Length: 278
Image (cartoon, rainbow, N blue to C red; front, side, top):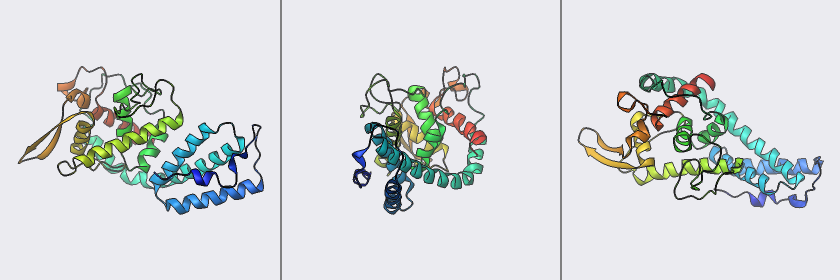
């Protein structure tokens, strides 16, 4: 991840006041220079823009006492996130047919008896933007958060965060927007790292615009625990050690669950996404 600290310190930005701040012409000129620098550094790379945006949000929390600096940080973060959302809006419709076909193929298999009311799509735009910037399926980000911590906006008592990554320590209970952004990025990075470890055996090519059920099962198994098998007919496959984590509420074999497994929740989110975000 590229660091932006040096750019934010240009022009003596930490001389801010504690009263309501009105930007000067010099401020506006400095911000325009910083925007140009961001464009030069990122050269259209949405992942870099999103990383810079996350760092800006963190700095806003750290320097909340400075009205001037927060004016800079807010203006720059809005500039970056607008660029990302503009590109996302362009690409999103191109995948609608493929996503609809995927849901039509698999969407009739999950139980309708499990209560569907939850808060998982309450922060959809934030999760959709970070998923887009990382070329990662938004329904998978949301479904994993649901399965691990039921989409609560807090830090669980074990310190492993909303995606329950055992190698991380996020603290407990209160969560900030900057911390929430960090946990999502860590989840996506961890998921891609898992794929890399098994890339010679398992093919997983889940992207923002396309996915396959075999890839989805392989990902789910690797994330929660897998047994790797091989057969002449199917090649290498990842079988979930805990099938209920993957399939609760999916088909007759896994009916009677209190909440959805990751795969049926993925489909539920996909259905919501198709109806509400296009």
